[in-house]
Amino acid sequence: MNEFFPFDTAEFAENPEPRCPCLLLLDCSGSMAGEAINQLNAGIIDFKEQLMSEKLASKRVELAIIKFGQVEVLNDFETADVFTPTTLEASGNTPMGEAITRGIELLRERKETYKSHGISYYRPWIFLITDGSPTDSWNTAAQMVRFGEGNNEFAFFAVGVEDADMSILGQISVREPLRLRGLNFRGLFQWLSNSMRSISRSSTDMQVQLESPAGWACV
Image (cartoon, rainbow, N blue to C red; front, side, top):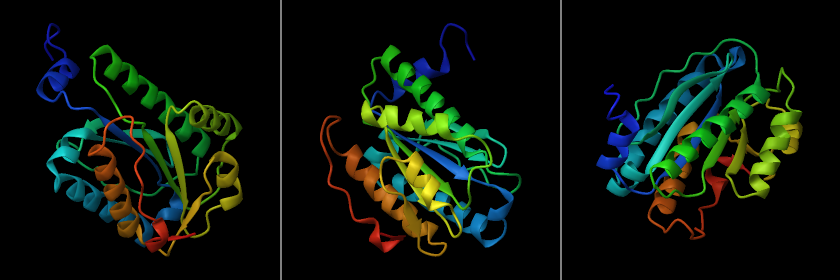
């Protein structure tokens, strides 16, 4: 990278569109092995393809992925047109609290980058998907979620898969958590892509009416 022409400067010079950040916090613990992780991988590929079907969304929607089994940033924020999904593998425990905390920090860093380059942005979304219960402390993460929601820093959504602990998810999320119907990750990501495309077509201060998630979630 040229020290006089940092990547993010070139990135925003080439694409000065407002950004619509979407952070995925994905449970890749051992219990997700098999069909669950396969369907999750397929859903993410579909998500990318659906966003690419609309030019404005491909330039405005930014995706980032943090996986947890072991917490790791697999994809830092990048627009859908350059986002390349990483194949997820299942192993480890469920350090959900650490993943949420790291995700909020990553999002704050990205928002500071927008501000320093004069890039406007929509209210970010954080989307947590898990099939279990946290194996670490999650109280601080829950406080950070509620503080961020209360100050309109982001919108936080929690989705429980199969045997997820919906009670704990309800204590972490301000919104009522949703339970996925079976392993219908493709339906979930279709809804998420439709939501992101609708938001990206609006102005940054506009409230957008979203579709009901009833097609893929038990509500």
